[in-house]
Length: 234
Image (cartoon, rainbow, N blue to C red; front, top):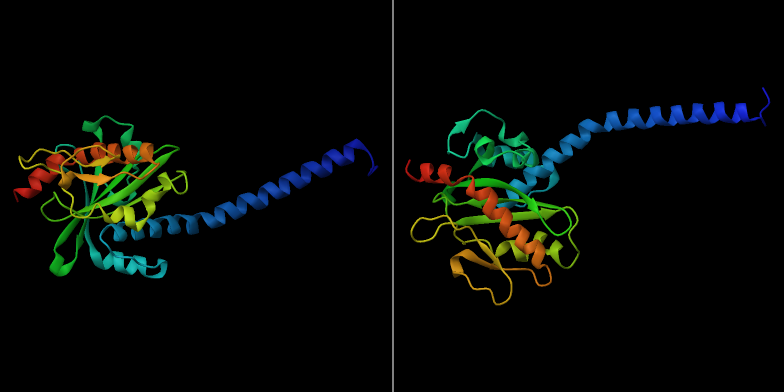
């Protein structure tokens, strides 16, 4: 075969494409279990962060297993339903009507500090999805801790939701008013008035992300109101 001919060039290129595609496919398949495990470990670290435990990657699974003593799934009526709390895809659940959703709950035993209830959240910022976890005290009203993350918010602006300084101000805030009505929190921009127990300051220059986070808190936590109320009476 003439190595300078078009036929040879076409065959050579085709063979190389097939070989490279096979190598990439094999590599991707080989790494998939490791990628899945890394995602699981990262999720466990985030849940622990919401209850104020900063665990390394190496320690996260052990501490998670020791601390998260229970997990289950509820519906909007506050009823326990079948499902694996850890593997629920919030993006898929958000596509459903509220009365069709299933929602995860994680219980953490912190010894003398009591039981904390961790609720996963997912919403929309300025440039893409934002998400996080809020941990509530046993009164199912007061925030014990919170952690948030994002896919593509602006560095120095909306991306500040990941900073400990921003997340710290959520501690001690309340979701229900004095009459027992769910009001969630206001992530307030300059000049915006709200009761102190329901208010945190928005990120300077990151108003859209801040308001997206406020909406995320209201939309996701409101689905748990019946569950919260039932737990309070137990």
